[in-house]
Image (tube, rainbow, N blue to C red; front, side, top):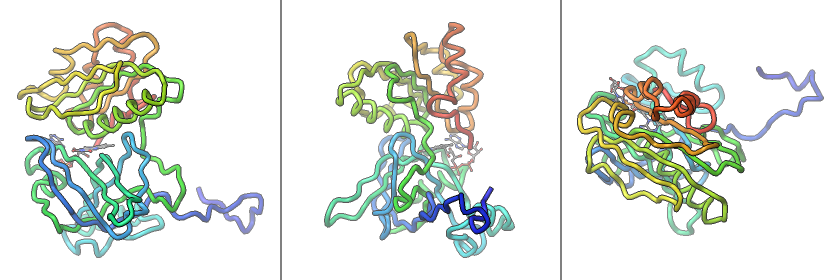
Length: 288
Ligand SMILES: Cc1cc2nc3c(=O)[nH]c(=O)nc-3n(C[C@H](O)[C@H](O)[C@H](O)COP(=O)(O)OP(=O)(O)OC[C@H]3O[C@@H](n4cnc5c(N)ncnc54)[C@H](O)[C@@H]3O)c2cc1C
């Protein structure tokens, strides 16, 4: 609810720029990391303003509307209400992705943002766009605005400074987020904090196993689905053991991943409780 600061002098108006904004970006590079993973690197004139809290920072990929491209896209203000009010054919397509990395502030080099796409054929507009992406392609991304000064929102992994034991579970759509979380945990360990735990990543095939940073004390287990339904392989064949006092996180961002809640990662009642609570302390079990 907005407050009329003219009649409420006790309320100080927030005059900062919006926490999120649209960026017009261009594809600089496309790199196939594995059969499933495709890294798209974006550049853009104003990406120096792009802020990312790291971890599982989410953004929106904004694809042109079926009719009018970006012509009906409201830039700023209550863009979301305006977007919802549009007829479907004028609405840009919004899909949620994770910032895999941001490189900025290097004199002489343009700021870059990497997004890792888990390809799933041509069934959806975002995967279809990624599959066809080539250097020079232009698109719009909605992301955190560095000029706002933060916090920006869009990070679910907030374990707290005192947490030292982690259980993180994800499928391929959560792999970019989990990869960044692992890098964060490695930095945390390098800074002298105790870090231990288990990370389980489920991917479609053996060639999707990526070379990730894994801090000492953390075990990363890859579960290869090999044609099995999403989450069934990890819940059946791998039983990570959360030690006492764990922070649990389950991140399954594809539609099939919804089953994870019904197929907890462990057998004991404690593990089932942890998995069922997984959306609270850290990475939310996200839906499309
Ligand atoms: C917070 C958050 C962060 C995310 N980060 C990433 C990320 O970094 N990388 C990434 O690849 N995805 C990520 N996702 C998942 C991504 O938003 C969805 O996979 C999205 O549905 C893809 O859009 P689409 O247009 O390709 O397919 P849609 O139009 O949404 O779906 C079309 C069809 O494809 C099916 N489908 C959609 N996604 C998948 C999939 N992954 N596997 C199999 N079938 C699928 C749908 O069920 C539907 O039948 C994230 C989701 C959330 C909520």
